[in-house]
Structure formats: C-alpha cells, structure tokens
Image 1 (cartoon, rainbow, N blue to C red):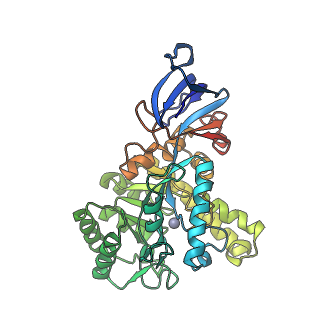
Image 2: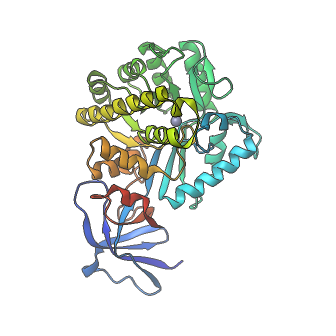
Image 3: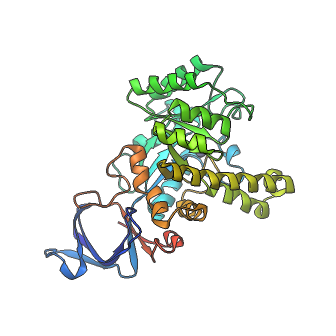
Length: 394
Ligand SMILES: [Zn+2]
C-alpha cells in the first residue's frame, strides 16, 4: 500500500482557536506516521503519493454523537421507522455512504426499531446487526449502538421502541437491551404527560447502577425540563437534546458529570419545514411559533451548559429526527449561532464525541493514531460553513 503525504494544509483539531498553517501529514497503512511543518518535513521515503492539500484545513474525522443509522429522516421521520426491515437495512447502507462523504467517521446510534434482522434473522434493535457487520471495514463508520428506545408506555408510537410501565420494568428493559448486545442504554425522560417526568430519580439511578454492573452507560432523551431535572440528579452519563435546561439543571449536570448531546439543527430543520411541507405542526402558525420558542430555549440551554462546564458533544439526530446523515456541519453552525466559539463547536463534533464514547481514537489527530481525518476547503475556525466543503476523507 503506497504511503500518502498531505502537503501544506492548515490544521484545526478542536483544541484551541488558532489555525495552524503549513502542515504536512504522512499516512502509512491508514495510520498517521508524522505531522510536521511543511518547511521541515522528514524524508517520506520512496513510493509516496503526494497530495497538494493547500487551501484546505485538516480536521479530525467527525463524531456524530446522535445518529439513527437505520432511518432516513425527513418530515415524516417517525413513519419511516415502520418501513420494512429490508428497506431500513438499505437505508443504513446509504447513510454510511453519506456519512463517509461528509467526513463522519464515528456514529453513536441512539435508537433503532426492534425487528427480525434481514441478514442474520435475530430479532433485536436493527442497528446492532448493522454495527456488527460494519465492524473493521474502513468504508463504514465506527459504530457504538444503544439498541432500541426504552420509554414509558404511551410516549412513543406503539411498536417503535420498548415500552415499560414502571421503574422495575425500566431496569428489565434496559438489561434486555444490553443482553441483546447494546453498547449502552437509551431511555426516554420525556413521558406521555409533558409536565411530569416519566420516572423518578431513584428509578433512573437504579437503571444507571444496573447498566454500570454490566460495564455500560445510560443516556437519556430529554426534550422537556421535568425529565432533564431527573436525569441530571440521577447522574445519567449524558442527556440527548437537552432542549429545556435551566441554570440549576446545568449546574447539576456539571456536578454529576452528565454530558449534553446537542441537536440544535433539528429545530432549524423543523423551521425549514414551515416552507417545504404542509405538515401542520411545522407549517401552521401555531406550529411555527412553538418551534421558534423551543429553538430559543434550546439555544439558551446550550449556553447554560457551556457556562456550567458541561461536556457538549454534537449530534444530528438524523433518521430518528428529521435531518439526513450528511448534515453534522449544520449542528456545528448552530452551536456557533448559540454562542460557542467555532473551535468549541468543532470540538463538540470531534474530540468531545470521543470523550463521550470513551474512545481515545475518536475525533482526534495524533502521530501513531488512525488516519481518520478530513480535508475541508477553508478555515472552519473563522467560518464554520467550511465544514460543509469536504474535499477529501483520508
Ligand atoms: Zn434521536
């Protein structure tokens, strides 16, 4: 296999606001052999393929911390969850190609429908079979998958996730997902009644403990404030969306080491549906103002979390929300609009995702590490839209 020298690029690795220019990177057998100033390269040896990377910035392979690999997204994303298993398997293959082209190297799958797998016949969350079959194949993202959604009965459309009636059922369902091969547990802290959390702090803590005994972590969907309070106090490992935090919840999250997985672009996508669809909850005036209000609170929540020192990782929610698999750049832009510095938004979509996953190779660029980096045209540290302009994925 020939070695590849990426010459005279800029570099932004999400550790600070300064763009490094004049950087060369030598890759050998999918590993980074060295990173040097272009004016001071080491001899790359014979048989080297030189890529003129000028005008591009090298960024770490992106980590989409909130993916739904088996689902396509769009304004009818929930309906799509009831498509045939064969169809959803094809969707996952398509999503892998979209992610790869967009520079996403790691996908954290936070929920898929339970079905008979069209390839191995096992009945379990579909993303688990997808993860297993993609493992070790460079053209696919690295996947960590949660199994299916565990929620209080009446929260999700029947037949989509795993429904439970009480705290004991919650623990059983969570352990059941781990038995099926899930890497972590995803539970719902929104309930059928939006004003009330579906589980108590003690009930959620019991799940966190049960998962911990299996060496696994628990993440919680939280769109509403009552559930966010419970998740923060119970010390789940992370909360997804966190659209309604307040200062006390943000403080409790920081104190208990609860990360926030931001999905602000979901609300931008919903805003766009006011123009592109006739779906009443997006297109009608009442729907529009509801989305606008949620967007405002969600942005404030990100600011509160950042101020409190909460780890923020970025996700698209593609598939299980309305985005598509190649749109993580949108979330980076949204985080900057919400108030993060561009380098912090880049960190959210790269290294912070690695921290969240507990994967030291995810979202980082280092000598000796895997060559999972991306070349984007422009400077993402002054212009986050550069993250859309992916030229090469190593
Ligand atoms: Zn989701």
